[in-house]
Image (cartoon, rainbow, N blue to C red; front, side, top):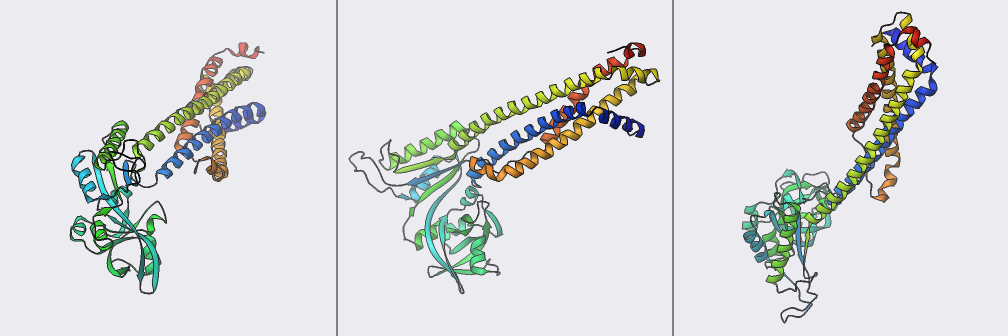
Length: 409
């Protein structure tokens, strides 16, 4: 294969048959280019859906309260529904087998200061399970634990940007921050892939929040993740059951959509999976259709090439060339052209995705890209198809008697 004379003959053949070589190469390059663009756009849509979900748990359910919009059982519309610790305990006890992680939230805004630095931040009282719902990454120290909740300790976990704001270049771990006139010890620092908004939050035990900022057992919302073993239909059914049971507890009308609002990501996940599944099927059909068209094109060119070179094959045989050498020179030439032009198609496709990628965000296509392994695999398929398509006619032609081949028109 690395015979210098063999490669000299291959390049001479390519040079003498430029139109045929360019046509063959263009077919391969165009097929790989379209293949790359199609799968790159599909990946961009997938990235958009993943970003919309953020870094939070995809099997989460959030429950918020509001005001009633309909009268029910003699109670007027406009009632304020207030959740308490009892709702948290009810969900925990009643649906323990369907719940993975569970937390309440009490949300406030607070002025925080350390030495000369001051700023305002969201303050959120939580249970320890909250870390897993938000997928918070602790980079120093620890998160809120059950002992903190039980003892109502004045400890906090702060976002990385809070540390940068208040402590500048100093480490916040173990230091005390003034929150509304009270000192809280920093026991942990976290980061969050969702960005700046999440990393400016301060977390503390929910019991401490309730005691200090209201002296009550009120909660603003309940958040949970359902058991991952539940399928989409079971998870959606669980969310509907939660909503129905909570409406019964507060005498809320069944059709009242404002008093108790349940957002179940199982519904989002199912819709996204259906959409991406359908889109993926379409992309695969179109992509492989393009690939098959490329295979057919390469195959036809190879058959034509062998037929065109029948007289040349007769001369080679007359000069003593073996059938094996005749077949190999044709196949190596085909593989060489297909590999080079396939790589060019890949480079052009990747370059186009990078060039037009930013402008595609307005069409909900974020960071379109394609797996190199996927495109290389497609190129190898084209190479094999071309080699197989050329092998049989080349093998047949190599068996023709020189005198017959020389008479071929």
